[in-house]
Length: 361
Image (cartoon, rainbow, N blue to C red; front, side, top):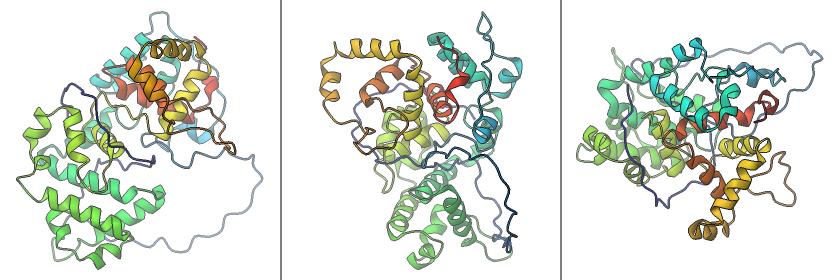
């Protein structure tokens, strides 16, 4: 599909308060069938087993549930790092050229990242399979963009299972006639509020879905013009997306990486990124120390440090990780420009992978 190369500008003030499971927009519905009932499942016999560590309540969007290192949560022996820091051929074949360029850049900036990068393939963004799914919708990209944003709203503040159920019911609203009808912005606007509420959408979410559909049904809007996406900077796209009801900066960034496949996206206000950065710095205290020294010479960043970080430990906090101030998280990530999307993928992996898989630098 190919991402559009752009330069980033700073200065956005819009932000969202919570991290969430982001629905990957890799399938525009082309034929909708009403979900079949699974019936009553038989209770499984009780078996003795060792307790499995609980996953975080808000897992990061890119972590694939099939990742063996997440499912098992077991300690594995560190991989041997080649002296020339080359990547395995299988890894190179599995991922897109742009993503490979990004991870190579990350390794150049920090060679100790090599083991965590090659431990498992990245099955979402960065993989050729993910790119091919998006490419199938290339001839109707605006429809893909609309549906991606609607799915984002559906998934807000609910579990992954609940989001999947609501989306299935949402799709079923559009079946009818001999050929069936696929979800579109215009068809959504023809639905009543009661119909949209019947699939499990809250009243505010119904308003969000209707507003997003209204914008995308208007050919005069910037967000319905492919020329806008081709010529605008990422920050300009963020600004336009954040005008939509129900879409904040976090959602706009997830849209940029998982739908537009942008290579330089970084969401410091994401829970998984915060957890991953904390684990990244556990074995690299010198990185944090250097960041503090550099930030000390930046007046604007010193001012930002006076504000409370989004993730901070309250007195009764039960977190098992120590949050790092947003200022330092952003400052450290700057080292990985213009491939911060790859670095963010690594942090997401770190947030759920046993830290012992990493060699100390």
